[in-house]
Image 1 (cartoon, rainbow over the protein chains, first blue to last red):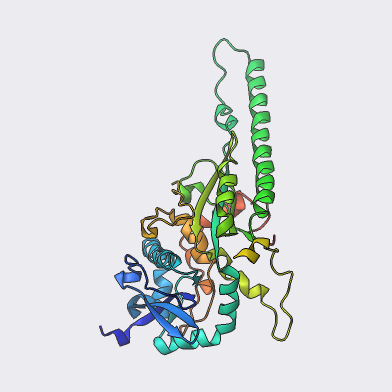
Image 2: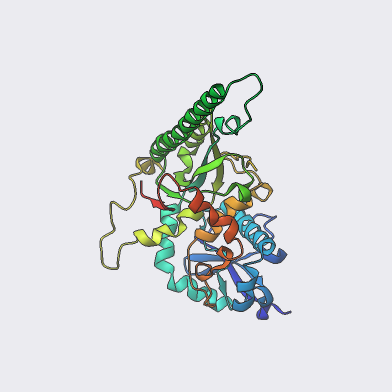
Length: 278
Length: 75
């Protein structure tokens, strides 16, 4: 198939940057991404086959978990590669144009949005923080038959004790979530909450009670990571992922954008005093 | 399923071991949403909620987040 028949998958928008994309970002379908510059913006694009990415097949493909997983990983690998050389604005998975001129139109139409979002995200990374409750008493509390030699009263007492400590575990997990969130918020410029993950999907032990993401300036990341790593307590496990490209915050810039003609909203973002030094 | 954390200095990122579920949290709900030439936007597709519904969306009912429904928290 000639290149002209193929669709254009747009991974991200960036500012023009020095250098080239690092080796190793194979892109979707093994097709290395390339840079398409239009004015003062650059789209990171890859050619993809219409058999997979035209509207009807794409709809079907997206429901195929294996295909979705491969595509998501390839998308992320490209974003991660760009992130080593510049701060990209990641686009939603499966943003597809017909051809290069479609990509140019997209950059043209979205220009002001992209510029605002890139400014907002420049120098920031996303960290994922998940809190799991691991109620220890839960297992002990499983209704064991009263062992021989113990009375029914002993059994009931044990059950009651187990339930109380289990309730305590949940309360501790809840309190830790709130405390941690408040503390992390002081280091973050924005936070967002994803759905808690199902253990059947994640394979992670415990019950995921908080699945949050924080947008953090790179210069503050080290302290942020330390805070998270020190946060686990008995019965409550805290996990960190990242640094991610600012996926969870790329769309938010749109909502914060001032309406045309309106003065920029000074309150849109938490003040970031460290910015002065950057 | 734990992800080795790369600190400020990024490792070769292609090497990162990332849990699919963490990735999908971000790629299906994050990123700038645009209409490309194709009208399909992933946000419009019931998609994943269809096939993975049993897995992904069962979560929210069983385990409500202490912060209420999923969504942004302004700091």
